[in-house]
Image (cartoon, rainbow, N blue to C red; front, side):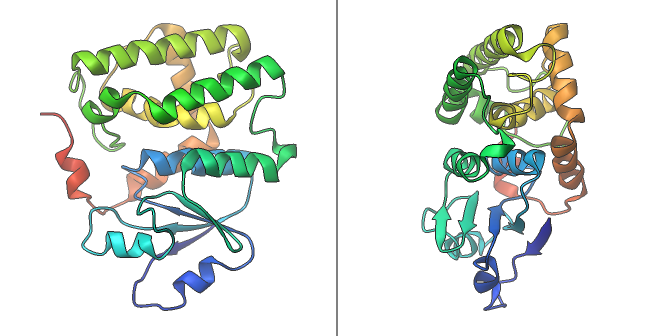
Length: 238
């Protein structure tokens, strides 16, 4: 996987990104949970792409993202002349273009449930997101436990328990690593940052997630980042 650090002084940056192949535009690995999801899904499946990283909370962040998408947010997938600017839409596109990678479970019932829990994560859990923002480097045990966040943690645990019991077979949520696991990977990182105590089976799932090569690689690269996104640091609970 090739990585390009966005340099706004280079006029050819966007032209390079739109060359044949896939380009995934992401934010800082330490903070950007939305970027983590399609990145982990693609890396886990062995789908090659060029990575462009846009630093968050900088004076030129909005202008740099606008080079790739008018939506103003990352992640963004560039596929030839196509622009796909939503994490779930990106994963769906990858699943369609690479059916042999089985990014969704092959079993009909498992696939339906996987899409349901992914959609729930994509649109829900606002209290967990706001009270326990992703910061992989931080260690803040016990913080962010608002009533809403606690309720969201409980719901995540329910989802994991049901998926692992029905389809996981003591591996990932639906047996093999899938889009569903990629979508809950940032939650695994949040639980580690904030020291969320889990039932043994769920903690074992989190351990397997962190050991997965794609997740481990994201975390390793996040830990090496030196940039600080002040706005995201300000979101951390006192």
